[in-house]
Image 1 (cartoon, one colour):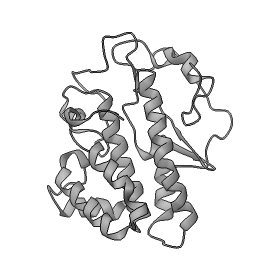
Image 2 (cartoon, one colour):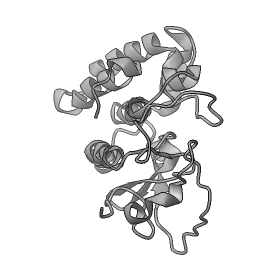
Image 3 (spheres, one colour):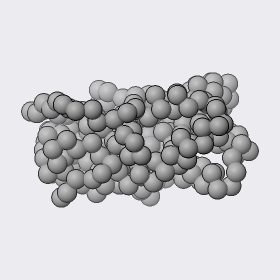
Length: 225
């Protein structure tokens, strides 16, 4: 397997996949790596915060629209290599020029030596604002959990493209639906926010909202990415 341009691979990541660890947990268990040269200008979290609601930053928002396909390909590539990332969030997505990179595989799981991608049992680390309902509940989870997390990231990106801030999205969720800004616990609020975004976006910008609707739902409804 070769490396992929949207995955932070250091030294041929897919050729040294065992660095993720081969135990049931999927934790990194034997290798340590240092990045010796700057790999990114920003992470996606700081990029979104810097943009804010400013409508005149057209070039940056057009760049965000390009990232949807790049990130989808990156996660599909990981899943094709039988790897679940398990912690997709804006701070784990790096931006270098016009390239977006998925990074931080500290709790990723390589399921190539197992019977499938589904796991269950205690979860020792999660980022609640981006995790799926099944991860939040400690239930059975699989690669669809990555898709849910990516959907929440997409929703933040669309919020900025639509002229809002991520904090404004979070405030809306705290005030609507089940009044929490943890997406997996407030899917009603998420759907209401998506409808608000539809009103703010022109048709050609709004297409990702259809994808997000399919991504931010329980794993048993997913058909894959």
